[in-house]
Length: 145
Image 1 (spheres, helix red, strand yellow):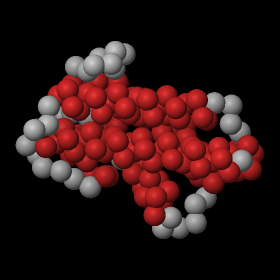
Image 2 (cartoon, rainbow, N blue to C red; image 1 turned 135 degrees about the vertical axis):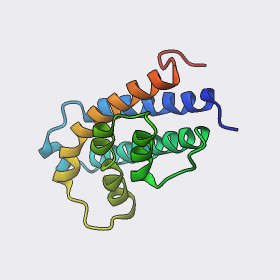
Image 3 (tube, rainbow, N blue to C red; image 1 turned 120 degrees about the horizontal axis):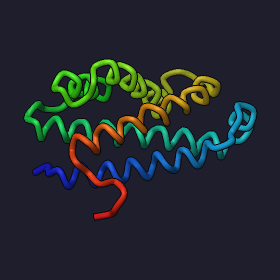
């Protein structure tokens, strides 16, 4: 059974990954990002983890609301349709799932410039996502359980 506490704990892990991405990307220029393989792979992995955990939280909440589950992209849309997320916000954050798919499956050659440019969006939208979801679920992300 999916409980609020389980989802809140997932959000705490997401917050940890989010903070790690902020740390990893702090002060990183496009030149550094493109030339430093370790930095590039670390940031790519953090983005992947953030998106995967966000969609996991989405699907857990959808199931808790008896709405089933959805693919990565549509999990954000379905939460908007159920009133959890604002529709405009869902349409802005949902495309992060496409970036995750490229990073994981390498459907196309990974364009380092596009990934680098997406770092700011991931930090912005998932920072907002954490706030909205913590408020909706009444999670205290500042204290461990």
